[in-house]
Amino acid sequence: MKLKIYKIIFAILLIAVIVVIGLIAVKYGKNYLNDQETQKIVETFSRSLENETKENVTMNGYKVIGIVKIPKIELEYPILDIDTYNPEETKEPMKISIVKYWGGQVNEYGNLSIAGHNNYDGTMFGKTKHLQIGDIVELTDLTGTTIQYQIYDRFITDPNDVTILATNDNTIRETTLITCTNGNRERLILKAKETK
Image (cartoon, rainbow, N blue to C red; front, side):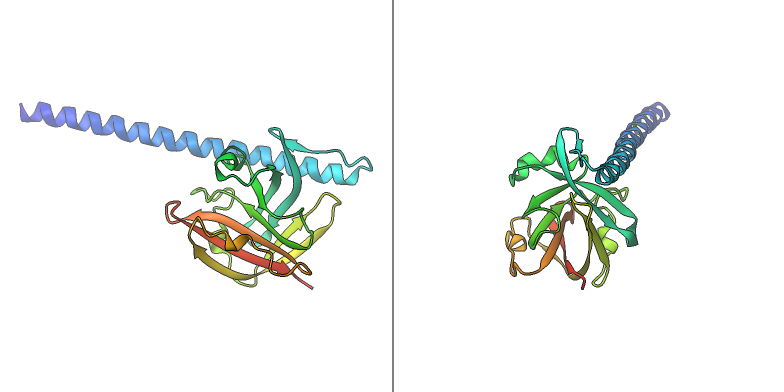
């Protein structure tokens, strides 16, 4: 009788493990396919900058307003303009790419805050935890201009901390990278200024 109970428990555990592995494979598979799509959008955006017409590029209905590239962690994503600063409304576009969270346009003076998910598989802003002060972030805007920004501050804060969005000096170009950390209970913030 005990042997039969152990077999049933083993079978249930085996099924649970298979289901969990299947769910993980689906999640990472979706992230992989999404990364393939974002690379196509980056290429399309780059080609559009070469054309004199400079056509608008969109991804799933969201306008692409620039490209963020971080060579150290081999990151390159389109920046989506979501026309809202409501965290509830950023959930869908953040599933597919990096989004403009707050500020002016890419490479304008002031602080442009961009946000992305901290995916466990390293996609989106999943590798930004490896960045340090001094590392370079490159932003390409709609005119095709690429400006390098150097990280000068790195810290963790509360998700409700809006002081990170403030523009302290409108005479410099600055960008703030935002991603979740610690099980989505905190935010990893990387602040970078234009290099001269």
